[in-house]
Length: 163
Image 1: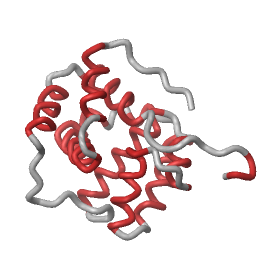
Image 2: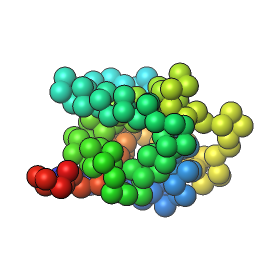
Image 3: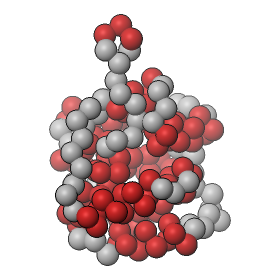
């Protein structure tokens, strides 16, 4: 998996801060970011090729067939880089396709096909601060931040018969 991190210190610090949060807090923050900025993120994700879109949709369709608890565990596994069939599938996707996959998860959360965010969930002050920091970034910086955040998630794909 090739991943080239941005040279922008602001973005690198924000990514590190996000990764430093508790796993469930990371999921919540990422969801709130998509909720508040999904409309501006979406145009970047369709930069994904048709094949990338089909791959993201294929993995999303597998995830939506899981129970809500399994869906939540899968998201945690992605962040924790657990080695599972789904996290390896995710790990083999391009950065743009990974962004599209997370966007589809947030849409699924809104429609109820993916485990929804508890309605009374409150971000920690640290996560709230990060959310405001992300809101203050320019569009290109936001997209770079999201890519840098989602790219290293998941597990390395296996070779040949190990898949």
